[in-house]
Length: 98
Image 1 (cartoon, rainbow, N blue to C red):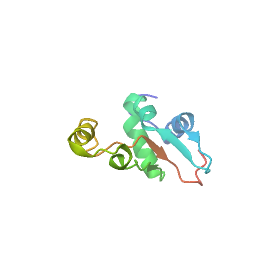
Image 2: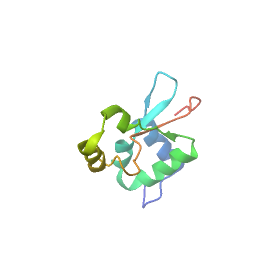
Image 3: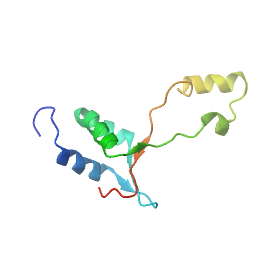
């Protein structure tokens, strides 16, 4: 690879290396693994979007943690629960063969 250009084949190889199979026939790739690729991470995220990979839906944190009351609200704000969240992983469609 030279410069900041990354070919489709190179990105496909990186996605195949970083992703893992799920029991449902889909593949999943961690956001942290994508970010660890450094300068290629933006190209990888774009490739995933073009290939119909979807961000995993995050669970509703307030329902699970029982964050009622003043301190519960503060914990969610400090942890970033009050703003937009970055998905932890991306999931392929079942028909994807990477």
